[in-house]
Image (cartoon, rainbow, N blue to C red; front, top):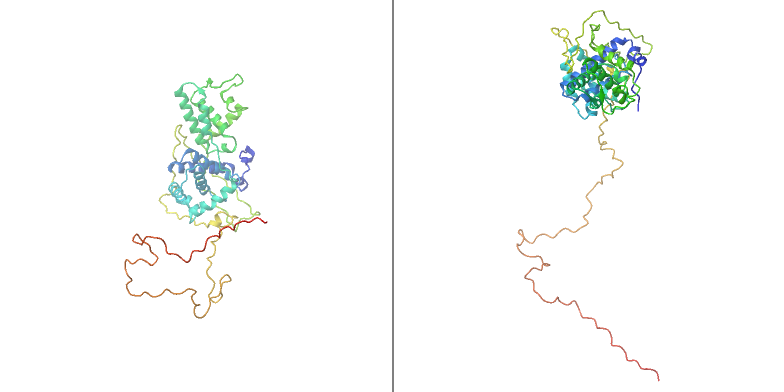
Length: 398
């Protein structure tokens, strides 16, 4: 099975970074793609496991591909489409595209091309090969509920802490924590963060032993305070105001005819405009309403050919040709030639003609023996052969 956890050096040397996209811009693209999957899944009434699985597919995909080659919104729809089938909550591709169109502006939806369904279906094969068909994903939700049942304390405060930790797990999907640590570690760290913010201190828990100095030592061994604080800071950074570039669309895709190893990739420098980000609420994940840039303008979506959207990937094979019968002048090799001339004579005698136009009614056939047939012995079929001869007398010799 592939190993899906990376250190921070690998996360800063991704294909997008080597393609000229700064790390800050790539993190913003990941956040927007994950938030788009969450909003689309919530609007389609999908479960949290399905949404989280789609986000994990999204983050794993861009560890092997660049945002310049594959637009993030098409990839997000494809990841959600595949996650629905894996988690046994399938949705039709056209329904996902319909919801995506309602959430995106015309300019952003223009990256789907003329046939959005074909774009998503084609990208699904690339996604399966990229994630190496490793479809089963574990999430911190189950571990969060499992660990919370072992804690002791005020039930109201404990419930508030678990609800806050659940919200942090939802928001952690917008980060790369799923590429850094196992779900058990993430669940413990976010429960620790929720306990600090809700002022709930765990004093006792079920299964406590003298070697357990903290409650998380019973669930995850050798976890340090520095690791917990690092995970907490990555989640808290989502709620702090950040510098947002004005253009929120993906960079232009490189066409197949111009893509070359010797081409120099241009660097993308974000502008200096600042727009603060509102802090997320604690309980439910807030639904983000897409902002329509220039709603009074009529923008024509760019028409992108599918083979230019995914450069270097082979197109789908053409439909097989329709085979027809050979021309009549050339007989097929597996058939005998049709004989010419009159038909051959019949090998059986024709039935005799009926004696009259209307055959007799209620006349039994000659071999019919009904209830009125005469009773008695059957007629003899010939003379009875004589029986055996009487034995000859035995005369002893004189």
